[in-house]
Image (cartoon, rainbow over all chains, first blue to last red; front, side, top):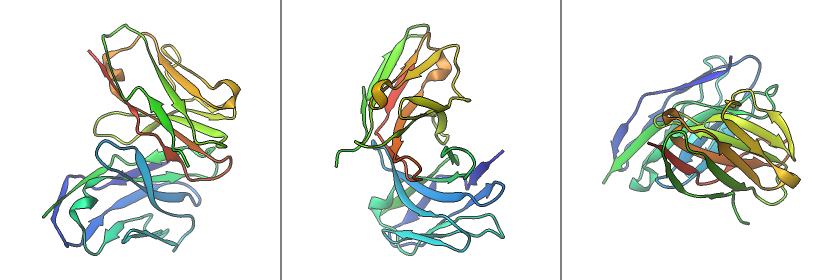
Length: 113
Length: 113
């Protein structure tokens, strides 16, 4: 079945460092891919999405490119801030599965000043 | 625009007791989801409603979990009787029918002792 795998956390960075969180997926066809973020004490928020191969999703300085050939959707940011500290979830929706989101296990990011 | 509302935020019960969670989706959103998020894991879909009909409940433990969405708006999720392994955050999400972006509530954190 469809699945999403993320890099293990926690990831600890200093402010202004470069961030990469790896995400790979297993699915037939062409799923839509998402990154959600969960700040402490809050619900999941959509960060960015991409719906077809080579699409780049971007928001708040974060970017991710849908790579069909490597089945990946890695999240990147050039300069992280303390306020980016949160748990990041990679997820997919397969066009044939009624809209159910399938999530990775989440990666905790801690940014230190 | 008001977001997805959930209550209560926290609940502590003893095993074998019953508990209910409530969700009010974003106005006009026809699709409603309940996810279970166990600590350290990504959310897993329990049940999906389209208006007041069930679309997917394949991962709902039907011997103890039940959910309803009367009048196609609010929804309740019930657990009876609860087990220790039901300790988790229960997330409600909603989306426009046929649209991929799901909006999440803050969740209900359940502790079963």
